[in-house]
Length: 430
Ligand SMILES: Nc1ncnc2c1ncn2[C@@H]1O[C@H](COP(=O)(O)OP(=O)(O)OP(=O)(O)O)[C@@H](O)[C@H]1O
Ligand SMILES: [Mg+2]
Image (tube, rainbow, N blue to C red; front, top):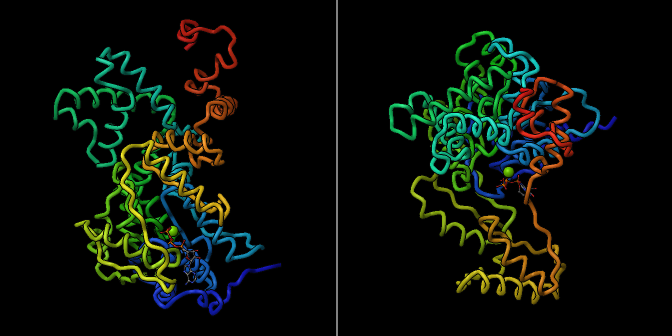
């Protein structure tokens, strides 16, 4: 049976000095401040393996992060370090799947039955759209998406949407929708994505049994991409870590990209307030970029006011200079990019090139230009797998098999494929 390199010395050999300090500081709160490509995820994964090499129980280790992609990466890298043959594994997941796990375990503490549904974005939209229709409000002013976003913002900010009502017309309607929305979800034994964070938090805060269980179970808690956590997520880990106080967060305030969904860089400062005894380790050696690129990046981010000072360096060579091209318009920009790729692709394969843009709409001129010049390309991202219509239809059928009372799933596929069932008929049935 292959056991991976769970030997302390070998685990530490591939780390620089600061990384090693972060990995071996296993007890007490730890704040790791680090820049892009400085080995943050490497530290988390090695720290997990190190704890196991020291004989800690895998089940007592919890590592959380924000996106599915980051969680997947973390899982793969830990599995690689551990090797085959481990029956028990540490708990590595996103905040949302962790929340789901807690809720499935303790649903009965919240008067949900165990087989509750999780509504995704499009389910939520259907519910909100129906409520708005019934309330008969101006559908230009109150779009389902706008109202849904306002509800979510208020909830994440811990302002109860009910309290919004005091603020004005618009807010009053949002509060009203929210109330009916909650009733609908309750009635259908369903929770939404925000609930996956907010309900476990409520359990932790108010239910001693749950709190004791989670505090006891997870002796070591780690958070990667800490800068992207929002306040409720921070409170979840803070409460869970109250007992053992072995909380390690790894973050880069310069990379905070989720402020629009309530993530708050100030959580880094909150951590220092709540865990004053925390040790701080800075990772400043970058393994991904040339010195020139690091310097350009530093000159841009140093203008940010709320940030922790850190300056990346690398032992790599200086590298090519960075070019700033100011284009006249999007056509000019696309032409410039395409010409550069044509010129440079004489020496290297197209797979070595990447073009970034800020919003999806900007891909169009680029795609057109590349296609016209016969440069083959692949758009990464685009519509996510679970957002594709046919995938959602199949999932809806599966949901119905599992739970014939799932009205939203029923409505989605009752006429898919088309079989002449109109809205009127559906309304009569429901
Ligand atoms: N001490 C080291 N020696 C050699 N390579 C390293 C070392 N530390 C990190 N690396 C390499 O640098 C790259 C970046 O590491 P990692 O993904 O852990 O960084 P990160 O800080 O999490 O990056 P990001 O900001 O993208 O999340 C990886 O390819 C990793 O293998
Ligand atoms: Mg990382």
